[in-house]
Image (cartoon, rainbow, N blue to C red):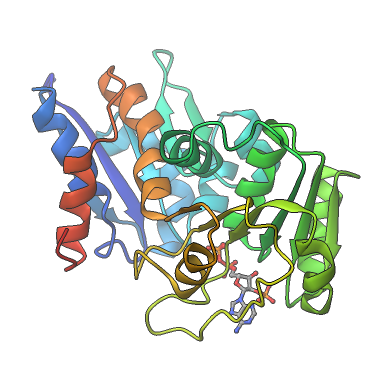
Amino acid sequence: MSRLKKAAVTGWPVDHSRSPVIHGYWLKKYGIEGSYVARAVPPETAFSFYRDFAGSGLVGCNVTVPHKEVAARACDILDEAAQAMGAANTLWLDDDGRLHGSNTDGLGFLGNLDQQAPGWDRKAGSAVVLGAGGAARAIVWALLERKFTTVHIVNRTLQKARDIQETFGSQTIAHSWDNLGKILDNASVLVNTTALGMTGKDPLRVDLSPLPVSALVTDIVYVPVETELLKQARQRGNPVVDGLGMLLHQAVPGFEKWFGRQPEVDETVRDLVLKDMGVAP
Ligand code: ATR
């Protein structure tokens, strides 16, 4: 058998993924004999693909939409984050052929803020999360990991925010958008996890005036890199962190599992992804 370790990003479609750029750079930087490619997995074969993962010839993979839930169901072992989210984005085979699943979105969120805004969680008080999709779930998990006392989840569809509250318990509170003004005045972190503000989508309209200027504002949208929300927050003096770093940091645990080395999220990888997105660094 070839000694070349192969990993991939899997999903449907998968061509838009930036992951091959990120892992390709790290493989080259560390001189590791390995490959990382995009592999499209049609929905009708997704469960069997992950369930029979050993037959794929890969040592592990990333999973992107729409397969994160089906991949989690196909795994033999899930870590705590993947269990809490019911979704896995990073898989690997162990020496006994068992398939492990992790969800590294929350770790990516934390890694990004730790790098860009060290000490951001020192006064872990109240946080406000906009949106209640898969990314919101990962970020709520991450904020509770860092001992935030209250995490407010604000969503258009209130029931989805309530579902997250049900998973994580009494430290999380579900709200509709009408409540936002009331909860911002006490927040130390504000995170947008909705697709609003992304190029081609509707704008995100938030009145930031009640938010303390000491509060950290971050966005998971990274196209554009500086969203309107971040621009508004920066102009009024809030510390801001863009969402591109979350994409880069969520890739770290997978690379380490598959190729045996913890990669560094450096300026070069950030610039390469920006270039791939057609944005001049
Ligand atoms: P992901 O799993 O990547 O987080 P998602 O499940 O599609 O993506 O979630 C998108 C989030 O953006 C949801 O919270 C969604 O709100 P609903 O649950 O009410 O659908 C939010 N969102 C998308 N478009 C929106 C809009 N026009 N106004 C308000 N919220 C919106």
